[in-house]
Length: 202
Ligand code: GRF
Image (tube, rainbow, N blue to C red; front, side, top):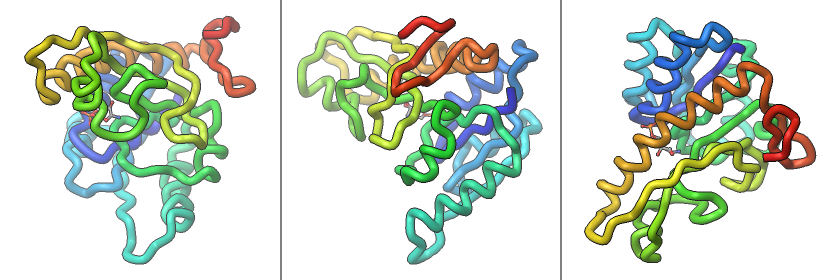
């Protein structure tokens, strides 16, 4: 399974996937693409000798124009799976539909709770007793694709968003590589907007 990972920042989830692919001969990260030239994840990719590309937003460029260039960069790698790992751009419907069933994302909340940004602070403000992360197939609606796997963490009374984010991140690094592995083994599918593992509705 040829994997392309899209990032914008630190890339700790990318790292977890790179590390797990070392042990999984079915899966190989063949390219890492960033929209930010200074994303630390690019350095991580270099350490792992993975090819990188940077697709920076041009001034006055439309989303469609940007995504057309992004498709060119992605297609160069002929991937079977696109992994969004902290890629901080909303993708056009055209892009998403092109890779429907072949693109996954990790979101730092227990979806359908808290799509969008600032999820940790929102969970604290709502006095939730648990929070977490979700890996889901990407569909055109933002953070709304069918969930494949979630990890829960407790929220403690004196948590701030930074502490809570760190607790969630740790879980992300466990569940994202696992989902990538399932996909690489052909165990996952998206059909009629529903996620299946081994043919069973998740
Ligand atoms: C993670 O919290 C992920 O849930 C969200 O973006 C963050 C990326 O972190 N989509 P990293 O760059 O993988 O460290």
